[in-house]
Length: 387
Image (cartoon, rainbow, N blue to C red; front, side):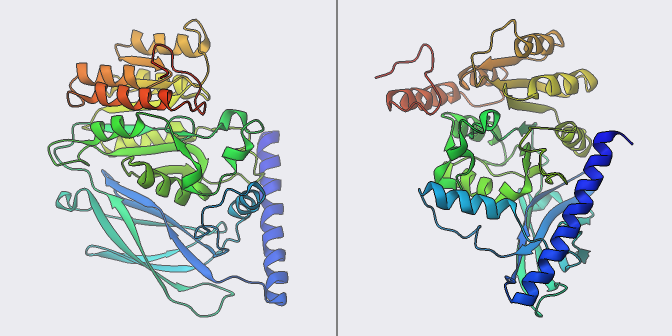
């Protein structure tokens, strides 16, 4: 085992011991909060149905009202990451005719797995959940509902998108500089890049309606942010889709240091396997390793990638590492764009007949409206009127 692996295992062991000791003290002092059931959004495909969720103490973070107070947001963000997980909880589930029982692990996560849902359930199928037992807590029965994405037989392709600095402005690559954005605890505090909603809705639209083509959000962000991002997308009119996020590492540094540890590659490979008959569109940003990851995927899965679009969050030089990566993707015969906006991506989409005519104009108008507003949240868009 490598030194980093040993360090990670030691940190995990210390973390588990700390949580157990802390729970014992909280219980003795009567400071234990009631359990809550947090289902995420799952999906079905080849290999069956998959849904993840978590059992935690309800510390009021998810239901906290919007606030502009920097100190209060900082406190809520601390509580969002400093979760009190409930291990060994028993969750009963029902998905159509399938049913079973799942137990939460040491971090509070549980998983539901079953045969794939019939396609006539598209685009969504409900999974009924019931928390029947939480060790160490007063007897309680909590009901909840998880959703899984069922892909239509008339879907033409799958969209995979990053989240941070791809659809939502987070400043993830410069956490210290943008700490107020990173610590914002409500969806109202988060800002979507202009044109994202218009372009993503156009991609999702198809023969079966506005959710024909599925969108999956694959990100290195932790599951702790799921509810915030889910509500943010609903608020900003961005199509809903399953999120494939990550557990926080034992040392808690993976997300802060932007360490992927192969997460995005594994998740995209899983989706390619789940939908072997559908091609993919990959969307990311230049702040991380999305370009090289997408190039690797396109190279190893020839014919499966329709196009790649990278949001340039800086001033990427075409001769830079990111620019070279875009060129390498194009050399594989895959259309690829690197741009400050989604206008170029929309143009490629219209040319390939992946989106309806008029999408370019809708995206261009959204970007121009943002430019005219005088906002400097995203910098200045070259070539667009400022007023």
